[in-house]
Structures are given as structure tokens and as C-alpha cells.
Amino acid sequence: MVGSPHSLLRDVGFDVQAGEILGIVGESGSGKTMASLTVIGLLPGAIELRAGSVMLEGRELVSEAMTVERSSSDISMIFQQPRSALNPTMRAGRQVARVLEVNQGLGRAEAMDNAIEMLQHVGISGADRVARAYPHQLSGGMSQRVMVAMALACKPRLLIADEPTTALDVTIQAQIFDLMRSLVAEIGCGVLFITHDLAAVAEMCDRVVVMYGGQVMETARIDDLLDHPEHPYTQYLLKSTEKEIDHRVVDVGVNFALTGCRFSHRCPHAHEACNEFPSLYSVGEGHASACVLNKEGRIAAP
Amino acid sequence: MSATVPDRSPEFVATEFDGPAEQSRGKRMLGLARRKPLLVMGVTLLVLFAGLAVIGPFFVRDPLSTDVTNTFVAPSGAHWFGTDLFGRDVFARSVHAARLDLAIGVTIALIAMFVGTIIGVVSGFFGGAIDELLMRFTDVVLAFPGFVLALIIVAALEETIINVILAVSVAFVPYFIRLTRAEVLKERELEYVDGARLAGNRSWRVAFRHVLPNSLAPSIVGATLVTGYAVLTVAGLAFLSVGIQPPTAEWGVMVGEGAKDVITGEWWTSLFPGAMIVVAVMAFHFIGDEFAGETTS
Image (cartoon, rainbow over all chains, first blue to last red):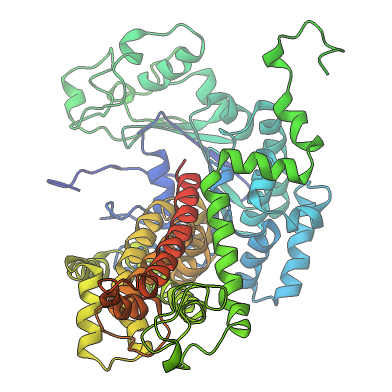
């Protein structure tokens, strides 16, 4: 905003297959939300897309003006706070119906019928009663179900879920996970699942992208990542969940190196080569790590 | 309650919870009157004024009929508020003026709110050059005291009631622009706005159907305050013989006409309409203040 532009994301790339759930993990400020907002074309005003590409089923969505042109039924999103993600002055059913009106050109009454059907489909009992309710009359879990109904009403090709269960308690969290999984399997859309919760990733995702400081650290199938993480950052991230917290990693807080590897100032293995921005090195099938140590292949014990 | 759970300390017994359900409506009103005396007073006064404005004129004398044999009659059973220089009944004139002044005040508040809210949403939601332009415009308007601005506009135009309404509305529009814009700036960052956009709504629709209804609360509160100010401004202009002219029954006109009678001892021709202005403006402010406290806390 003031001064020279900063680059927030660099060399960030990932792909999601239809029916696949791709997790993006990282701490606050890692750029995971920025990456997803870029895909959906909702970057905040002060931030702009300078270069990059978003492809959906072979179509380039980034226009020459560097804005993301998407039809709203292609990509949809589930937000973190179900409460603030619903319009407080509009009845829940109407908000779902509106999506159908805009994207499928349905009439008002027909859209409402379909919306109520969709609400039943996401496991809301008494859907016509809930459809008439305003968001403040719904519980958090119920609101998130309404959000899921809104997001999936038009059968999108890609669903972005930005920490969809952070605001919910664990029981509801499990219910929402189950619901998302079964609906995604039914619709066959790809999912970008953004979270800082490794447990959630382990439960939900097929593949994972680990981000730090706007850089992709490691990408792998979930089992590979949990079994033998390659990148030092991932290793520390996993370790921190085992309560063997290494204070060199945890204490520094949210700031990262601005040149070279973003993790270099916190990394115990940092050396001269880390002043160069690393590229992703393949360390196995579908497994890549952005650490110079991985240049020659795996470093972690298998 | 406390008998069945004797081990609970007295402050833990939920009087607040099981209290209201058992109270009669009368008790609840008393409770409200104790907690929010100004609100109850304001609403009561406003209801009285509204009644006076709507049905009062059917029961009083003609506010314009003169009676040279009964000039400057002091307040009495026949003439509650006395009569003026032309023998007109001050009470009848005050009641008719209530209808006119309140109608004008409410109209001004509604016009200013309608225009101000729309401009405020456009300015706050779309931002950029439009916002800059509109904000500088409001700065210019706000640079003049509202009263002086209205005075200039009415003086420049023909002095009709419609022009008074328009002029005073213009003076209050920036207030609503600012109120709405501030609220819109807050609301547009919330996720439901992104959600509405993602759902495929065009931005004008997101602005007016999603953000606007959620940004109205401060303006609605503001409108009650502005109604009071508008009555005061209109009466003030009329007092200065700008805008509404004699012999119209209007509080400001009456105070203006009656002001010179005070010296000769006929205090009633200006005191009663003046008191009406004070009480009416106070009623709106009591309500506005109490509501403002509610929405900001």
C-alpha cells in the first residue's frame, strides 16, 4: 500500500483433479488464503495479480487485464466464519435460492423449491423452517450447512473451503467433514481445502501443499507427507504437533526471509545456498520439496 | 425457586431469567420507564404530537380567521393559548402548525436519508474516484452550517414550502452520506459480501441488496435526530421570515410574529408555539439518543 510493492506469493502452483481434495496447509501469513483468493478472483483491493495463470478444465481464467474471469457456477467457496458469511438481513433459503436464480436462470418459486431440497440434502431437518429463518436464528453448524448448500447448489467444478470448520466445535466439525466428503464425491468437483490444522488435513485430504511465507515448501500425497516429510519446515511443523516443540522454530513469530528461501532465517539447516530462491525438487512420485537439501533426492530416512 | 435450591447464593437465583415471564405488561412498562425514562418520555410525547397533528386540526378553530373584537385575549377557558394581534386563536394555530411542522420535518428526514443512503452506499462500496469526488462534495456542503446553507438556498429560490423542504434536505444529506459510508466500509469487508459476489450477483446488486440493508441501522437512528433538527431549522428559517411566510400557521412564523408582543406584555403569542418547538425537538432527541446508545453499545 505504501512504498514499493511486495510480492506475497512466488512460484506458487498446484493442481486439483476432479473429485480430489487438495489441502493447503500453512501458518498465518503463509499465503494460503491469498493463493485461494487469487484463484477465485477476490483479491483485496490493495493486492494485485501481476503474473500467473488459473486453468479450469483447459480454459485460462486469467484475462489479459490480469483479472480472473470465471462464471460463478464454476468455482465456489465456503468461508471460515459461517456467521459472517451469511447476509444477516436475508432469509437463509432466499440466499441459497438466489445462487440458483443467478446461475441457472430459475424463477423465484422454483429456485426456492430447489433451495429447500438442497438444504435437506445437506442434512438439515425441517428444511422449509430453516429456509425461512434469518442467519442469527441458526446455530453455527446449521449456518455452515447452509453455506455448504449455497456453495454446492450449482454443482461447481472447484470448491474452495477456507478453514471451513475453525469456528465450529469438534463434533460439528466431524459432521461437516463427512458432509463435504460425501457431497464432493457425489458432485465430483475438486476441492481446495485450506487450513492450519494438520489433523483436519490428515482426515480430509488426498494430497497436501505446505506453504510458508508465500512459497510452496513441499507437496505430496498425504500419507507420504506424514510418513516422511522432506522439507525442514514440514518436519518442524509435524514435530510441533507432537509437543516436542523446537523453540527456534516457534518463537520467531510471523515474519519470514524476504530473499532466498522464505524459511531460511528459521531453518536449522540454513546455509549459503539458501540465499537463492529454491525450486521444487522431486523426491518421489508426486512428492516435491523446495529445499536445496533435496536437490539430490530424499534426505529423510524412509 | 430459592426454596427448592437452598444452597444457591441469592445472587445466583436467576431472577432475571424467570422474572420477565411472570411480570404483567404494566410492570414491564414500568421497568422500561425506570431503565429508559427518556425513551418512554420521548415516545409518549411523540405519540401525543402525532395525535395532535393528525386529528387535532378537526377539533380546533380556523387558524386563519381573524376577530378584531378579541385581539390579545390572555389565555382563558375560551382561548386556551389566548389570541394574537388579529384575534386569531393561538391554540388553533399551534395545533395546525403541529401538523405542518411535523409533516415537513419527517419529509425532510426521509428525503435526506433516502438520497444520503444511496450516495453513501455508492461512495463506500465502489470507492476510488467516485468516492473521492462525493466525499469532497460533502466536505463542501459540510463547510457551511446546515442552517446557513438552507437559508442561502431558500433565499436563492422561490420561497415556497417545497423549496424549504428541498433546501433543508440538502443540508442534511451529507450527514447520511457519512453515516452510511462509514457503515458500508465496515460491512463490505465481511465474508457474506464476498459470498454474494461469488454467487454471481452483479456489484450494484451486492451493494444495494446485500450491503445497504445491513448498513441502515445508524441512518435510521440518525433520521429520528434529523427530524428534530429539521423542525428546528424550518421554524428557525420561518422566524427569520425566510421560507414559510405569514399568515401560515407555523411555529416559527408564530414565534417571529409574536416576539414583538412580549415587550407590551402579550407573552402568550410567542411562548406557546415556542414551547411546542422545544418539546417536539426534545421528543425526537430523546428517542434518537436512546436508540443511538442501543446500536453503538
